[in-house]
Image (cartoon, rainbow, N blue to C red; front, side, top):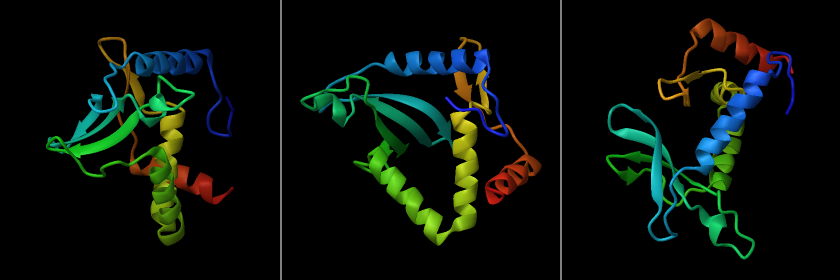
Length: 148
């Protein structure tokens, strides 16, 4: 794991990362035809971001039993059926070319996610993402990516 100009890794970060990995490993798993989904967050009351297990890599000859299938749903229907992480990265590349300002904002969010900047421990001692920053912080973070 890397230290950056903004974030220096602490023992707390390492423990939080381990806790989140353990939590993801312990998400319930179904079969390739009947995946079990875990909702990560709900927004706008009818949309949710979730992961389902198992992912496609669990069925390979050299299986990854911890692979997950990402999904965004609205009213229990997938908004982007059959998306894999590869398509998500392809979409991000398109944004980086077509809408650079939007891409910088996405980079800031990814950065904040990677370093758990907006994660809080809930009452069940689970680390959960809760976006918690104002416009000044976003502007500062975007300026940081502009300076690189």
